Amino acid sequence: MRQKQKSSKIGGFFRLIWKALSYTRVIVLNLVFLFFLVVIISAILQSAPEPITETAPLYIAPSGILVDQKSYRSPSQELFNLENDRPNETLTRELIETIDRAAGDERVNAIVMRLDYLSGGGMSKLDEVGQALERFKQADKPVIAYADSYSQHQYYLASYADEVYMNDMGALLINGFGYYNSYHKDALDKLSVNFHVFKVGKFKDFVEPFTRNSMSESSREHNSHWLNEMWQHYTSTVESHRGLNDGHINQFIATVGEQLKQHDANAAELAKSAGFIDTYGSRIEIRSKLIDRFGATKKDKNLFKHINYGHYRRLNFSPLEVKKANIGLLVARGGISDGNQPEGKIGGDSFSALIRKAAKDEDLKALVIRVDSGGGSAFASEQIRNEINNVRESGKPVFISMGSVAASGGYWISTAADEIWATPTTITGSIGVFGLLPTIDQSLKRLGIHSDGFSTTELGEGVRIDRPLNPKIGELIQQSVEGTYRRFLTIVAQARDMTTEQVHEMAQGRVWSSQQAKSLGLVDSIGNLNEVVAAAAKHANIESPEVKLIKRDLTPQEQLLKMLAGEVSVVMDAAFQESDIGREYNNLNFFLAPFADIFKPLATVNTKEVQALCLECAQF
Image 1 (tube, one colour):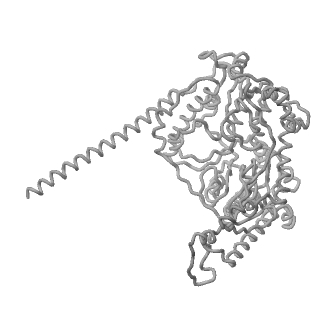
Image 2 (cartoon, rainbow, N blue to C red):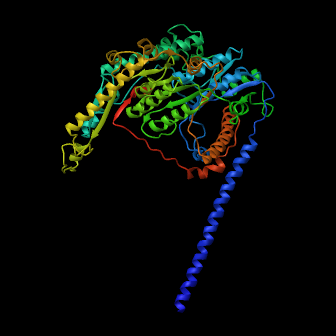
């Protein structure tokens, strides 16, 4: 009896300790949460935008790649994951609307644009931003671009500026466009990996890296056409902006080694003498030049007077500002997959849901779909096309605006529109289908691993990676690919008022430039997103178009975290841009970095064996 009482007391003692630990854990977690809340609220309060009281240039420093829609990041990840100092994506539409707003703003007298952190994003988006800069310049306001060095894509955007500055130890890297792949046939043979290819069309070269050691002549033929046309657009645009003779860039590239030697290996001096930049100097010298032109800030005489991009957006584009929209904008960006997919990918179910959401909105009189995709699942592409057809049948017009790429599955979904528009540098087409299936039975055999068994029918073994492909199953897959291709041809023929024979002649997986596609009848017009919106408005008899971006609905918790993350990102963005022009900055990394790993997103991707996908489009 005494032993039981003693055990009971000991058990009670440990239960008391456990309760104390549990309460302590809850208290600590609550304190951590309150700490986060205080830090975030303090950041929001301290970052309340001050009114702009002086005339100054708008300072823009885009970072990462230009995109039509940012890739999905959970609100918790946006709030707590601060591992990367600079955003890896810049939203093209926001950048353009900010520049357009600044063009008519008397407080903004110029744009100063730093391009060191811009990675690219496709010629079409660079052109659209460049056209916004042209509209800004038409208001008699100068644009100045500067960077330590310029990559090919960075310089293309810089060429739209009135003046281009570069660091005296920098370099201008213009070398032309190239298209290269790695080919793995010998390596796969050595590993005894067998890739079974099912395709239609001699130009559908997605599978070539798995079946060849070099590029086929058909692949070289059709890729050279659009790549050379893209390069011609690049060179003619830059030469026009910089007042250079036709062919100047190709001549420069051909003799750059000799010219660099003549300039004693001074790349900055060479860039200036060749007419690509206007001036060069150290960071301090360039800052001084901007201070002489625009004046210094009151807080720091070593900084030129400017209006920060993030600050300007907060003052002029309030998230609480609600306008009654009459045109819906949907963004179809990324690979096309089945099911639900996050932003940055196109899901058959999730994107269809967005189309239905837009269709139900009675305020929207037309839809514009921005397609920037090299394709993917044929099933998901057809699912999305059917939804677009339903919208049109309900009487609501749908216009397609092609971005950098709208090929294969991207073209498939475009066929349902009233009109298809491409930008001058869009690549499209690639009307073809393929399937790809690897088996490693010979690889396993070399290791002494064998597969054996039986099934009730000739097809019962199914598709197994550890067994040779059953010829009858292979025949079924090939027939499925051919059937999907015939369906693709029929869809295009009906949409573009052609015969399937005519479509087949321009299909077979071949990629076309936008100008070629227009001459072939695959697209209706050439123009940017703003022009497509205007055309859709005219078609729907809308006098004053107001555009609404159609996005998935967030839960209340996501909305709260998104709002807080947006406020923090504005604070961080302002700090990054201030740092760009010479000021040291403080940020929230010190407080939040230790907790960055608390929230980690999970993502899954569904795939189909029958694909309408364009390899070269995804790479360019």
